Image 1 (cartoon, helix red, strand yellow):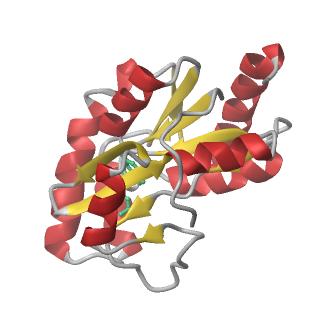
Image 2: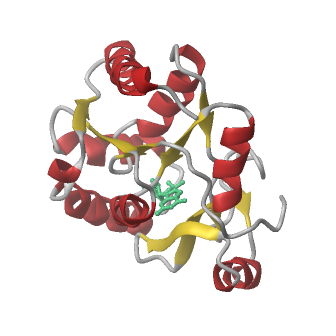
Length: 200
Ligand code: 5GP
């Protein structure tokens, strides 16, 4: 990963947020493959340890707290946040936007609601989606089924999920993830309409 300059490239940005358990990662991965508009999934940096199967540079850039802080102070992040009150940092590196631009693709950020607020302040053209399940009960069910986190971690994620839901109406579109294909097509269509004006 390059050290990165702090200038923000002039690119439109797609944001996808949604509580843990909303299925947003699955949506984003499929969206990247099927969207008629070329998209680039920005890899976030985090200080959280990798889960089994997660690959550095693909799922996240896994950084030590010292390295994350060094980059934060150097202004390398478009936004960064301590998510879930678990002490872990997450952030979007400006360098990722540059990579998207080099590929003539639109960067897609999968970030939390606070991160989205910060990006909207710094990037003029943003299209944002909030992914939710048909009922709030399903977040808990999906998180527990995923079984990758300790029970107390799941409870904290659930609490954050309920907080995030309160901010859903700040997004351009709320997408109900009742059917994966339908949800992905809806987002792809919205992006295609929006992008009709073209990227520089
Ligand atoms: P997880 O630990 O389950 O991979 O991610 C936890 C949360 O962190 C998710 O809600 C995800 O959207 C958020 N997240 C991941 N990357 C970033 C980022 O770069 N910035 C911000 N603000 N949130 C992020």
